[in-house]
Length: 469
Image (cartoon, rainbow, N blue to C red):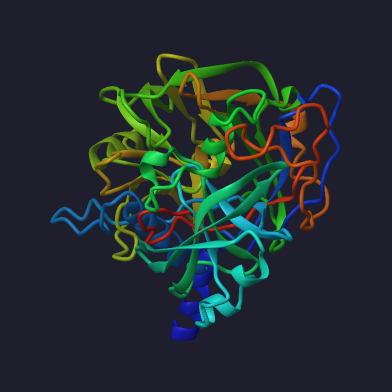
């Protein structure tokens, strides 16, 4: 491949394009201080030579995000990565500054920092994306503190600022975030300008309280939780650059998006949480339980794949006839299997029900009649398992602050229809609600408008650093 082709591909794979949605009016059933955001998603074809490079990047990026390193070849060759399935990331629209201006950011439950590209960044990777100019905001304050994040595919560096940040009708007047003055090529791609971390403060490189956590601790939400309902396009025959991606809600659960009840699993460990980490108690493949013991898994909307230790991943593929590790040196850690094989896989958390994964999501990519699975070997040890969008597209996922837990529910027909409709356009929410301790009073009885949300198709590819999205 040419250098220019690879460069263009890597930019696509890192944090890809997103578009926002138009506001939606509240239904009478929605709580005053809970709003939903339609999401948008970008997908890539699953066949051809690009898919192999795409998969390779996905595997390495997942490893790097969680502090590991690319999986080295072993003498048996069992750790080679393969490409299977469509990588996705989902982004929402936030508004920053006074007057407010909207930006698209990746929504990532696997990280806890907010950062945006700055107008002081003049590299090619910055000039192609919308950038924030603090001099145009009367409420902006330079904290004169350095900030940096290292990704496997590059790095982000800049300074910490404070300013008013709004999302879905909620506002934090003095939110600390980073303005990036140096961004490696491929970290962001227009129209996405940065990342909004939705994990706990314990993971924040900046040390700042995350936007969502400031809202819930300040009493701005009716319920201390947020939810994702994500769309699927990886099995579509024709895919546009931007597609509807689903719905992100803050402060309430939209009952029309699920059926039955929400099954909650408490976060593991004590003390201050970081990751949304819960116990996984079972993996059933072709009717056989393969997980040897209960393990802790990070639930991460900013990751596409499902990563785990080599021996546990091997046990999964041992139940799939004709499967084998990839012999491609670029696909260490991935496994391949005949595309004609019908795959049945489900995951169990905390002793609850079995949650099935669609065969379309298990199949990460397809190349020349060979399929590659979304379960792949990761070098990460903390945590050793990462559950990304290959699973999360199959459920409505709920992230509850108190009691600290993650919930899953069966998607309704309404949720499954979220992939239909036009591409959302950017907008800024109205009637902002602020935390009671943030310097302004909480708005109590006015309806809220949804801020537009977007979905960027990204790939938890080769080098995901301390954050990914």
